[in-house]
Image: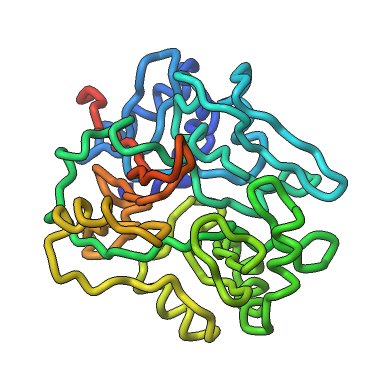
Length: 332
C-alpha cells in the first residue's frame, strides 16, 4: 500500500464495502488479511457477528442512509422520520444495548436528502461521566482546552429546496426557525460556505425566550464546532478560531486556566449561575498533525458540566466517550 493512513484506500475499497456491516464474506476477510500483511495494520475484525471498523477512523464514514440503516436495524431505540424534503435519524430512548456500535453513536440527528445522501452530521451521542470511563482514569496531561458551555439550543444549517434553513436534532423546529431569523449576514455566509464544503457548522442559539439556567439579554448565535459530513472529523479549536476570524462570527471562548484541570473540575462542581464547561482534549498523530479530541485521541472524551432538574437543580458531569480500536489482525 502506498499510504497506510488512508482509511478506505482504492485498492481494497470494493472488498471492504462488502463486509462493511458485518464481517461475514470471505472476500471481506481476504481484504482485511491483505491490509494486515503490511506493518502497522489499520483494522481489526471484531467478533464475527459484530461490525468491524478502521482503527484510524475514529468515526465511521457516512455517505448515504444505506450506510447507517444496517447498523440500527432491529434496534427499537432509533427511528427514521421522513419529512417532505429531508429525513432524520435520531434516537428516542436509551437502553443498555442502544448504542452498541460507533455508527449507532452517530444517530443523533443525522439529516439526509430525499435521495438518501447525508446533508448534515451534528454532534454524536455523549454519556454521563462514569458510564463509560471512570473520572480517575482521565489523563489530564493530554493537551486540552477548557471551553464555556452555553445555555441554549444546538442548531446547524442545511440547504433545502435551494434555501438555507437551520435545524435542531429533530429538523426544522420553532427554535431553529427563531435562530435563522436572528442570524446575521456573517452567520449566513459561514453557513452557506460550510454546506457547500460538506461540513456541518454547529451553533448554540441563546436568547431571552430560550432560557434554561442562564438569562441572556439578546438573541445570539455562537460557533461551537465544525464537522466533516463524510468522515465525522471535528475541527480543532485552532481551526475554529481561524474560521470564526474569517467570517467574523462569535466563537465559543476558551478559558485561561490558573489551576490544574483536575482541581478545576472539582471547583466547577460547586459553581452557581453557570451552564458548565467543556474540556476538549487534543493529541498529535504520527504525522505531527493536531486533531481535536473528537477525532484522533485514543481515550477521548469531553467533559461537560451541565445542570439538570432532579429534585431541584444540581450539576452533573457529562462526558463524550469514543472507543479506541487496537489493530489485532493476525500476521499473515
